[in-house]
Image: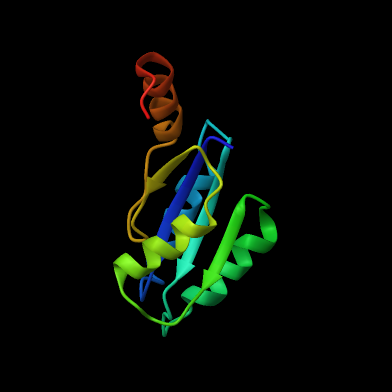
Length: 111
């Protein structure tokens, strides 16, 4: 697994499907998507679980609210990819974002 994409989630149900769909439509498929539900009071936990049932690349962590840093750390603990990619739950990325990152990694050989 090359990338672990970590998405902390709290009270963003309006934006979450677009974020997840942007990850699932990536041209580069060697990634896991770790959705960290940080105790969200809206439908985010259910949305995360619904997507995880549909795609085996998705892992969901449900935790008590601890804030953004706590959510990112929980995701990092579960990550198995060589590289960690952070994405906010109210953002979406272009279809070739991971492919572009992969090309840079191949050319530059970063840690």
